[in-house]
Amino acid sequence: MMNQPAIEVHGLTKTFGSFTAVDGIDLVVPRGQIFGFLGPNGSGKTTTIRMLTGTLRPKSGSAQVLGTDVVHHPDQVKPRIGYMSQKFSLFEDLTVAENLKFYAGVYAVPAAEFASRRDYVLEMADLVGRENELTRNLSVGWRQRLALGAATIHEPELLFLDEPTSGVDPVARRQFWDLLYELAARGVTLFVTTHYMDEAAHCNELAFIYRGRIIAEGSPSQLRNEQMDQRIFDIAVSNSDLALEYLTGTDGIDEAYLSGASLHAAGSVDSPLSADAICRRLVAAGFTDAVVVEVEPTIEDVFVNLVSRNR
Image 1 (cartoon, helix red, strand yellow):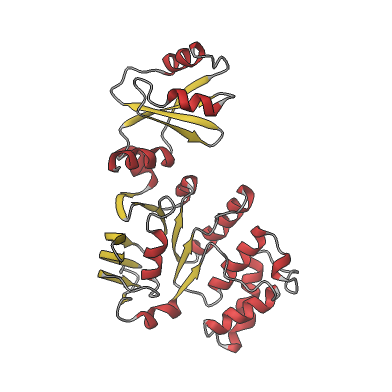
Image 2: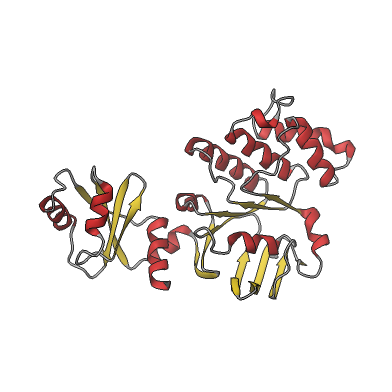
């Protein structure tokens, strides 16, 4: 069984009327890995997860999850998987302990095993001492940890996480990924959707989805090395909005976009454009504090480049 992929998908398609949400995708997710499924909002990530968890029937295609045909036998798959949504499906008027007990019942955790699994979840999520606290009183980061614990209390082999860090502050996001590493080390396969491109570096393998289609796959290093045909310049400037407007459409610059606290400008690998040349242009245009440095592409840069090519 361990030689089989955790997920194997061929030609998976889902339409809603005339709209195609997922368009004939192929995926293979090895066991024991953190697999990142990246794409902007509305690209088909959640629809794909709903089909893989057996809650939505595809129009066509096949999907094997943990060696079972999830399209025709979803009930055989559901006890072996966990699911955590971006909205943290918790009961806010229940305590931490009561939420865990409820989800243990949903997943049919044997009564004799509940205490040990509850204790493990509380320890893993650093919720020891908060068992009797109402869920509504927890911060977003703590609710996120509780939701992860509820989704794993039955010790699933495969865990689906649908944008689990949406709306969570950067510190809580880093702490959450530490928990995911712990789960992966225990042999759990993680299928994580996100639109935060910086989280891609935490994954073993990645697939980019755009407008319902897979546009690239591979490890983070493979994607940076094999899919990028542009040079990236990082630009620090005080008035980033006006600088972005100036750079957009400037000769030699194919793309310009916000990247964290700075701007990124992309140019062809064959272009003679240099960081000094861009800086001189910005200074001449009135952006006298501009600092420009050529940098290695990030996963976000790769994705912007891929989207531009597929647009």
